[in-house]
Length: 193
Image (cartoon, rainbow, N blue to C red; front, top):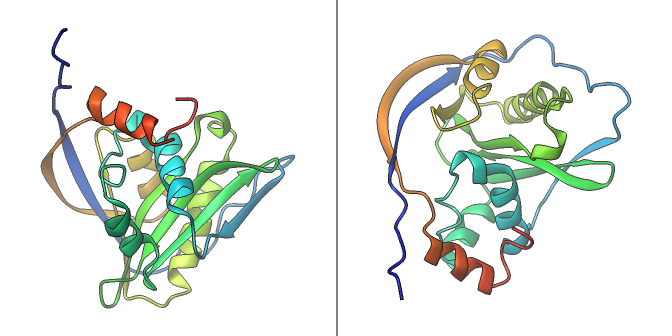
C-alpha cells in the first residue's frame, strides 16, 4: 500500500490592517436578494466547522479545523467572540467572526462568503455590517489580517472599506493532509465534500 503523500507547505505574505475610526456610511444590501444576517449565540461546533470548511477550504483556512472540540469551544463560545451567519434564500451563505479579547481593540477574525453567493455584491455589504457591528462595541481600533492565499479581492476590499495596512510578515501554511481530511470525513465532517 502506498504511503500517503503529505501536501506541500505553502508560503504566504500576511498583511495586518487597522481602522482607527468608523466609516461614515455602510454599503446597502444588493437589491433582489433575500438575505439575513444573524448572530449565532451558542453555535454548535459541527456547524461552525461546516462554515469554516465551506467558506475557507479554497483559501486554506485550516487552523480551526485542526482544533480539538474543547479548544475550539473555548474560543467560539467565549464572551469576547461574536459570530454572525449570513443566509441567502434561507440557506447558509457565509459568516464573520469578531473578537474583543484584546483590550481596546476588536479583531475581525474571519470573514467570507460561500462560493454559491460570490459575485452578487454581498461581500461589500456584509463587510460593512461586520465593521458596523465591531464599532458598536466602541473599540479604539478595528483590525483584520489577510494573506496572499486568501481571495484576491480581500485586501483591496478591506482597503476600500477604510482599513489601512500597518505591517506584513511571512507565514507557512500547512494544508490538510489526506489523513486529516479522511479523519474529519469519518467523524461526519465535512458532509458532501
